[in-house]
Length: 398
Image 1 (cartoon, rainbow, N blue to C red):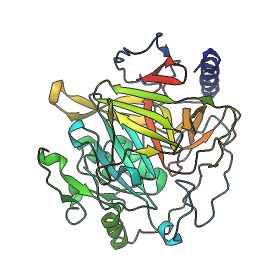
Image 2: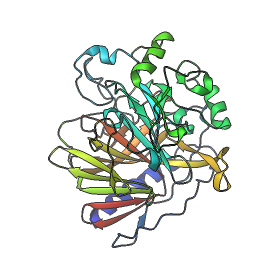
Image 3: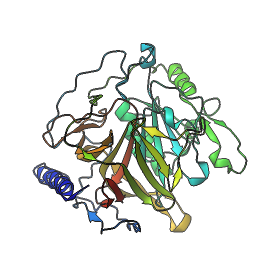
Image 4: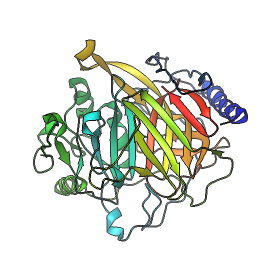
């Protein structure tokens, strides 16, 4: 990204701050701090994004009003998947409930199963610099997804956005209590914590993998559970993402970018392959594949979502002195970068209601469309720094 591109990004972010300052907000709570990883390959110093005034809101309170005008996107035809913008072979694929499944991203579990068939994947900090995935399946049903691991506070939000039943394996006591008190419980929660075991979750022993990394599930069996509970219906979506085959104007040519969540362990790396029109993923310098097919993970869109990260008083674990649970506040609105068709587009995400999916607008408040296909969301803190390694190649350092 050239100097002009950086100026545009800074202008948009500053405009967001000024707009937010005109909206009443709760008392600010400090954003969780992190020590940025070094960026050895950068040829210039990282340019930090402006620091935002945090706007924490308890999960069970009304969401903040958006800071940009909400523009309606026309609902898609009945045979078009609202999560991907793609037409389905059978409309019955959409007359059912989406399924969200928690998947580990520990180095020892890669390659994971079923990721390439997900409509949406959210990658987020868990704790200790490690990331974890929440996958969302609607039209597709891979035979196996996993390995399945424990839920986090972000999983009070993602299933609510997409009307999904959420499958996971365990959680800390504090997160479990929040889930039990949420509007997802009990019908849209499936976990051994709450008595849901086989056949909905099952073990697939693999040589060299620890027992905790051998739990799997799939959308088919979890949707059977939704059917038994009488909730396997098409959810109502109050807001829709926009999709267009052709890219909008105003993008910045970008061939590669990476997010250094934890350098050498959890670095998400995306290279654009113009021959297939997809962003191809590697992790920590290794091609990231799907265990079921052996093919590299490929996504039509990658979206960097800047959100307030708040360290809570919920203890997640005790190793290394202990780690506290992080609340990633994906409500209200914030900056976003959309990568599609070998370009980067600057804009905003908005979520004004609990059952609203993330939607995207440009600086004028007009819908910013995704490319039809699957989307990978990279959730990062508001103070994430960005540097240009060389023209069209970016490094983001939370």
